[in-house]
Length: 262
Image (cartoon, rainbow, N blue to C red):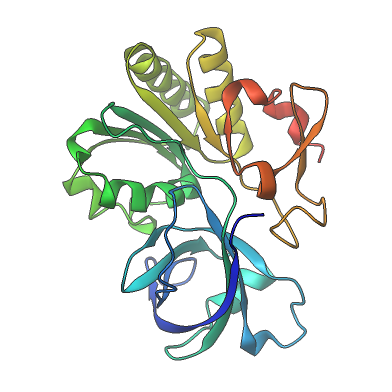
């Protein structure tokens, strides 16, 4: 097993992006080295025994000063996470899982849907050639809900708001065109909700394009013990997202429609 630490980190600040639903949590830096795509398990001391289980979050960025987590309030755990205040203490263990395999000499196409932007923020900030990165970003909420202000100054970003069937067709067409352009000599990374990844997976499979996908799954341990994040693989066995992922190669996974039953 890789070196994994469980440490107490102090909250530096909690920054609301829209006032009530989307936040950036900044913690003191654990001084780890990480690869974009890896994640952490978080459990504030103030939770006591309720909620009992920690919550998994992609590492949005990690440097010498801070660990950043971008999250959306969707349930009881994230609602309580949004109540944290400066100097509160949070138990964090990580870095967990496998990150993206990045060749800095190649152009990169990022396909992100909604909260799927989270694991790419640090990649963009720390990449030595951000001008070689391009994003197609599909979203349903207002753009102000997402931390795009800084990255939009460094890279080319295409945004498509998904509010109708027509918007979805536009998004699919944009993804098809961009994948075609990057399929021969670039890297393609994707993260987002399962219907979004299902679309990306289908296009890349049909074009025999190399694709790395970051999956998000509920989990209790983060180290492959509880088996709660199992997904089917093309090799007729199951993978644990926390242990074998969360980043997978396109050919290792079956269609994402099959994953929805897990």
